Amino acid sequence: MDKIYTVLMVLAALILIYILWCFIEPFILDMDRAVLKRSPADDPSADKIIIRKLPMVTDGISGQPDLRFFFFSDTHAEWCPVTSKRLCNAIRKAHSSTPLDAVIFGGDIVTYPHNIRRGYKYMSDVSNCCKELGIPFYGITGNHDHGFDDNSSAPEFFSLDNTEIALTSHKDGTTVKLAGLTDSGRKNRIWYSRTPCKGSDPVILAVHDPDAFIHLDADARPDFMLSGHLHGGQMKFPFRIEFCVLRRSDKLPNMGAVQGVYNISGTSVFISRGLGCGILPFRFLSLPEATVVEIHL
Image 1 (tube, rainbow, N blue to C red):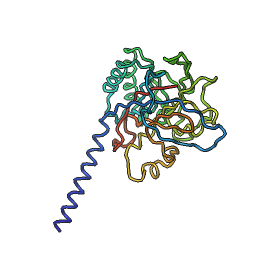
Image 2 (tube, rainbow, N blue to C red):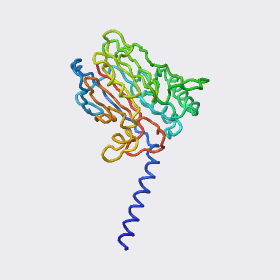
Image 3 (cartoon, rainbow, N blue to C red):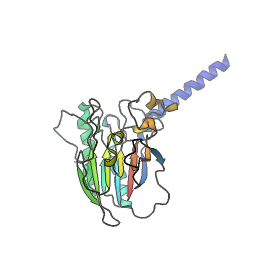
Image 4 (cartoon, rainbow, N blue to C red):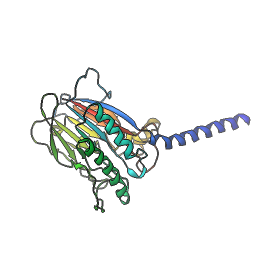
């Protein structure tokens, strides 16, 4: 009986530690660096999506990148213990070492529309930081951002939704297109088969849900893609239950692309774990993340 009691006490202690850590982890900001190298495009006639996991910093790449971004996503401001002040300090630190070409937000300001003012305040703080440093601030729409009724205030970033801007490589002056696709929301979702880009310049696509890649025509796939949405699973379970059972509709995660850097059918892709927590205010083995993304053409 004493052994059973001891086992139960140990199990109870482990469960308590697990619950406490799930509350603590959302407060820990992981500042990452991702280096994306342009890859040869796969055969555009191939229908199969091929996913190759890559290290965050690829071996053999050195020197000045063509472009350098600060990327963050999924603030979900209702439960985002990573405050705008902490995020702005991270932006300042990243910019002080080597100047940033832009700060890019990957969508999902809040989870619920009635909290949008709180989310706009967060974005306003980041915008003011970017203005202070002279850095452009761009963003795209996430699935939770679609169809807000309250437009009395707006996020103070330049929207990349279904548009493009031209940037210039620091190495050789090559023109690079930074483009975005809007997210139409969780219901009656619209997927796009083409990006807004025209011409043959290299393309960096910001899109909230990485599954958008699957729906692009093979000859319209970008050279680079920046995404969020998946929260790295947010709560990691054995046997990938978080995707196999809870998020079965997400295609790329169930094919192996959840967080980090990948080569997906010739496109260099970074998928962020995001900052906040969607719906449930917990994280487990999926730290909040903001990332310096270096692009090498």
